Image (cartoon, rainbow, N blue to C red; front, side, top):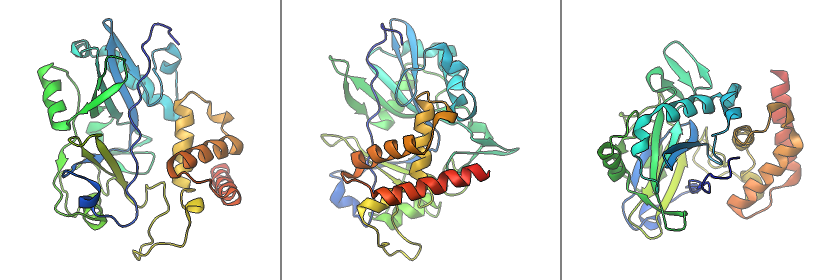
Length: 304
């Protein structure tokens, strides 16, 4: 890694909304709601007239990131886009563009499919979507995140080119049913996904500290939550965070961090899953159950 690079500043982790909830009791201000794109988290910033592209966890300035294949191939396309986008030189050094790279897992004639099997039109593949605009403080840490609508105007004022934006979603409800209707397109027709969305992100930029949550569709959620009947399943926190969706997310995180596919085994997935679950839920997962779903996951992969 280049020792002259500034400290890498990650986008904050966003917690899940789960169970039955009332948005009025969670947020002090009405949250802004945006579609969650099932792509690859990335960022771009400038330092000393040098464009610095990054993934979710690290810079991808080294040449090795241009030689990736399979899932990680999105990095070389994102890096090519960022280094070839001269307008990004207008980005002030204390700002970071946090984004989602629309990275196809499988491509079809009219649409592409994401990792979590969401379908999107071909005209947005290999594109940078702004998630948020971050401002660094005097210590180089993330100070605040700019209101999304203001961030759009900022990008236009700086003449930053080839950046796509999410559209704000109107929400007339306060509970999970209203968000489910948005995800299922019952109450949202102006969206990217061809079918159900991966989920939505709810953001209160005005509160201090700023308050963000994400709410995912049942098929994409990493948390075992509700049955189709709408009743809570009988699962304690030691079980409900151990899901096949989380295994896949952990695998992709390891790949994005540079681990070769052939080195990702059951033991590594178990350790990463355990750390991930403890960090999110503050409880230790059930060891036997976690081993069981990991073994089932790898057995299914070996069949294919």
